[in-house]
Length: 296
Image 1: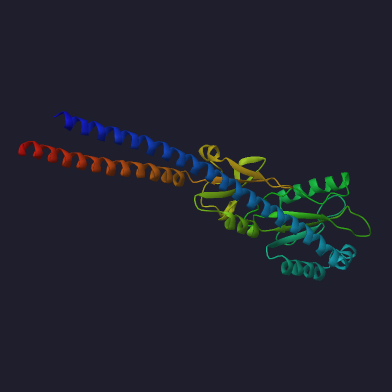
Image 2: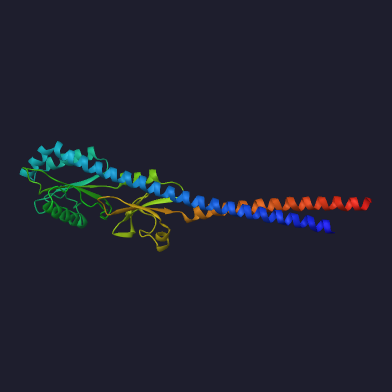
């Protein structure tokens, strides 16, 4: 009887030690996963934010190059603002140069649009943006960037790029161009990885979504505002220079929980196998011990 109890005690101690080792090891694996997942989130956000910033910088540069290249057309349009042929010529060239081009206009010295197309594509938000940029130009003639954000015009959510229009050596007039968010959305798509969602939010209103992989705010199949629970889950984010944008990484809570659940499920399975193996071993040893005692 004593030997039988000794066997059970040894098996119990072995199972306890194995359990402790597995639990400690699994806790370390869980923490490593969380740390690694957070590092990936930060890397994903940084890479996408850098790509969006680089894209906007290139947009500014190409817009300025376009203005230099076709300065004769803008000079002509300044003299003859009602020349629809020239304005359409500029629009066609912009469409050829920029695949995400939406519309454009030119302002007077006070930031008021001199030409707006018949569909009134330059809305109220655009006008406010124009006025702000016009004021910044008057304060600093070297200003070349406007603060980019999504203009929520019905059916045409877009962002604006502005640049001083040099005509007769004067910087007061502004070239104003609008672009869809197609290329921004493509950046989000290509930098997003499983278990994480990249979301472009408004920096001045971090709960308001500007764009996701689905498109601009008007294309979303979800609520346009982040919930309080979602905002709490966000630990990786980065602001994009010269914009009112912040790129955030929203981790999928189910993805993390499922992975952690899988780790602890492995522990339960391994301990069950060890316990069954020990039970079988103790049972065999006890039967052998009893048989020897009977043979005596």
